[in-house]
Image (cartoon, rainbow, N blue to C red; front, top):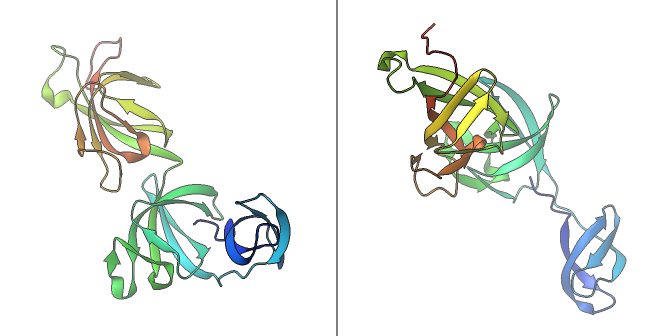
Length: 218
């Protein structure tokens, strides 16, 4: 969730004593220290903050899930596809919203926190990417195609036409299927040389085996 105290609208005794201007909060509290974005004057002022509400967050990570909570202003808008930093008992992690559940198990694409019962998310700091790897041309049957999981940081990029090496696996990326909640992609299937996507946006990779050992289905 964004920090609502990061920027506030208050009067500035230096350049705008009668009209509120945008200020950056340097030190929060009852008497906050703020800096005017118009003239850079630093002063103290009273900042009224919205009362936060607590909502459940279900986090999916590597096929497992756990529940945490998040505090946010009731009027803060949220939407599927947005990411925020979650401070959970398990770890501090970045998560992406995959569903917003309202009352009576109704799910929507966007809402304000006050109307949301549960935020369904998945961890995107470190992710596992499913990869379907076909045997080298002329060295195996179609039935020899295998599936593996690649564990990488969420911001790692995969590019069609490039060779990836992960542990004992080496394969040339031939196609990328992007997730439904990924933004900024023109198509949900990328298969032209140079097409790229980051790991946290990828649903599945398709590749051609490039290991130096002879192909084996075992």
